Image 1 (tube, rainbow over the protein chains, first blue to last red):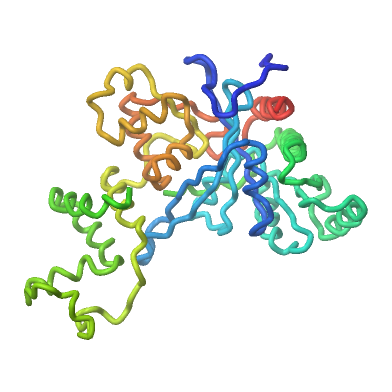
Image 2 (cartoon, each protein chain N blue to C red):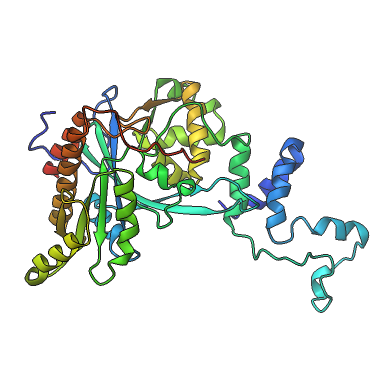
Length: 205
Length: 182
């Protein structure tokens, strides 16, 4: 774990063969056009890949396809972090549960002009006890505290971090991801003694 | 990929009668590949396309719209998996897989799709990446990789979050320190 100070290639080979490899994932959710892909592209510094998942056959609709964008960045030579754009359609049959199952947590990008777009995702993560942060998309300094107060008033859990984020700025995206991971760690710690409360989600195709 | 898909599908149908039912089902939803046959057998006219004014009497009332180009490649992909949609090996979308010595040794004798996976996985790649780069549906790739893992052709590096659990604290700590270094 002593890789401090060294720089790793973003998509390069992750170290010598035989080394233990593992991966983690973070989900980026939010309304249409709020900057989810930009957020991921900024941190992975690469074009996003697109994967298709197919909903299981039902009543003749055999060719439903869900496209899921994602990017990957090596955090250390053995750890690949994947960032997935949450599909708009929150249907467990259509790749959604594949994306959220086992995730570190979720970043919900929030456009103050269209708050309703992000509420579905927030509700989902709260219901399924998946830790998330609310990332306000680039709110101006002067009104930021007001906006945060209004959002707190909407009744989200008090421990959920509300941060400001510019999806185009690497440092901003990185800070958002750090605050998410810290929140997720705390959340995990709090729920450690008891049995796991997360709702098991059915696997898809 | 979709350009050569049509002849491949035809050929596959001819080779393996067991897949005909699924392929026929898919054709039922595509434009008119399934409808040509009966018309051709009843009235073998040489140029059917030259008479657009003739009403299409044999076409059923409902129309599901034009076929997407992805249809045919999906049929072929599911033929690879033998119609199975589940794998015996648990794979999450972020699970890393990599080629190993055995796959490198048997490079020349593998099926073409296995060969492609082995080439892709020379450096470790996640299930999602293999699906994206091979342009195959996730379910197909999971079955494909599961088969290859069972035969020892790829190594699967399980995630610490496997099994629907949340990731463990050690992994989160590692993610955190990695993010701080970015």
